Image 1 (cartoon, one colour):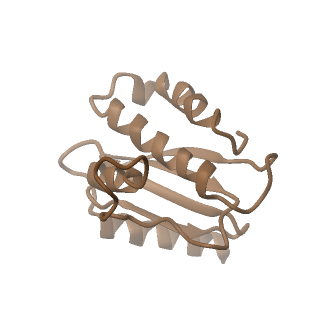
Image 2 (cartoon, one colour):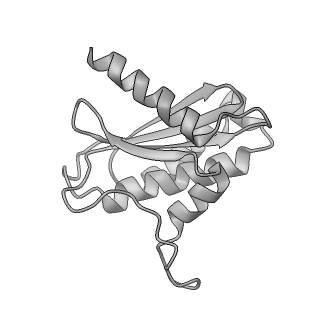
Length: 147
């Protein structure tokens, strides 16, 4: 999808009716995390132009659903949690929400294609892997892709 504000509701609409999401008790959490990650890709990706693409992927795992968003990236900064944003401010709390909903299960890296990848793993049950387990598994997966 295009790197545009309209992509946020479009992504939600496309994901909302997917089989594993539609009837999930975590549906609202999944859609909120998706919205925040796509919004960040649109607002904070300074590379590319208006024709640049954002890619959304959903990956299911052991008691977890990973929302992954790829964008052209930024030369200025990477995603970070800002817990000092004013409570009533207009922005600055998206990744705080993501971090809280995912129990610290989120991260970012640069892909082989030089895209920024931001992911968040929403626990679906009590047997969800820890943040550390997910990060190690994702790192191994990237290393296999390079070799």
